[in-house]
Length: 303
Image (cartoon, rainbow, N blue to C red; front, top):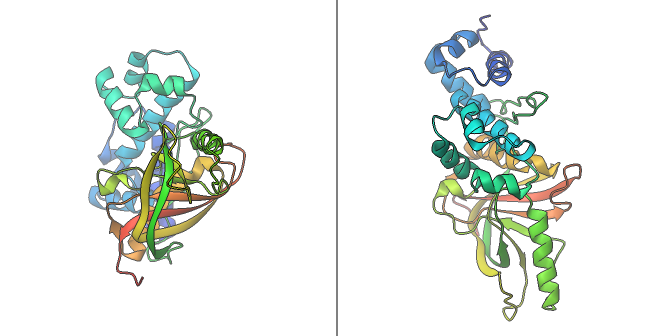
């Protein structure tokens, strides 16, 4: 089947057909020539169009699905790391552990014991592995569409925080910190915790949802063991509101970066990315979460 795209809708149809093919059989080796023929494009136009609509290359999408499948296997089966790494397409267990740790912020063995609430990685297109079949593919907005985010210049903010391991389960860490502060008779605004990256090493790390949980307005005299003080804010930020299932918050971040940032003409900068939680629950899969996301960007803004 060859589909030639002249409009955004036709482009979505052509790329969606390839995405469905990858999702249906992610074990099939990468074959850019087959995928481009399936879409009816030249290889250059296919990869350019795929990135435009998916926010990641077809190879990256396939590898992510395989890694999510392996993560699901870690949480739900007793299969060995050797078996899971082979099924994920890695030539060695060491290569699998390295790739897994870089994406999930913990090695596979620790992930298996962690009981984290999700095995998904952040995806701008919403496509994820599920045992019963992948979730729907959500193409990025039509080129030139009006951005839903806005730009703001923020002052420096100081939070008293606690490091959080891994990529999920922030609600548990927030509760631990609240209990610790209450034991110190600290008056925290416990309805508005912040989830933030801590000491990012490069601009590419600033938007990842891993790091720490903290609260504003804690007296400098309060310094319980296991906590730290951190500066967040300061400078230009891309700001956008999220409301929905907490499982999709990481996707929301990725989508904002691939969809809104280019339309606003901004690029990443060093700084602490963070969420301000407006309404809980933080990690109940069936609950509704409201939050504001703040992504550090290079932008000329009036103070």
